[in-house]
Length: 159
Image 1 (cartoon, rainbow, N blue to C red):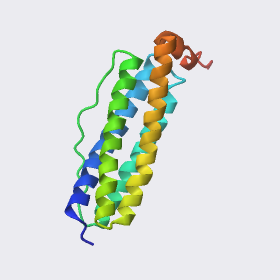
Image 2: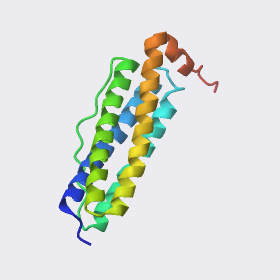
Image 3: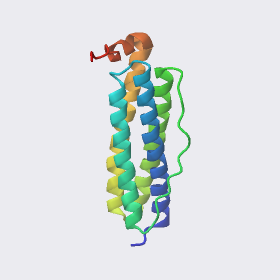
Image 4: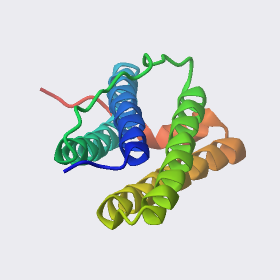
């Protein structure tokens, strides 16, 4: 099946973004684990799995349209502290929300309701990610980063 070229362009942008998000969350999770925030690391790793699922959904749709998924994400980024990490992740998620909002408008306008529904569902996930990160940053602002992170430090397991 041949898809609308503009829809395909949005799908290509989406898989590049989801690929970057997946890899960034993996790197962030590993970094958190390395610095001893092993209570937060699994949560961030779970986000990587969500982004992988989104990538797979978008790739499947591109293949349905007879297009090859082309994922060329930007490089991942290291962080000096958790606040910087969260601000970077927030920007990525806000970029995804903007992209998927525009993609929903386009898909609806060209009567591609299946792709519209996919973008809409993933948009809801990304909005939830934004909500969580904004909440974490709010708490850090109120409590300070050190106090916020105390809940995520777990003693090493005996072994």
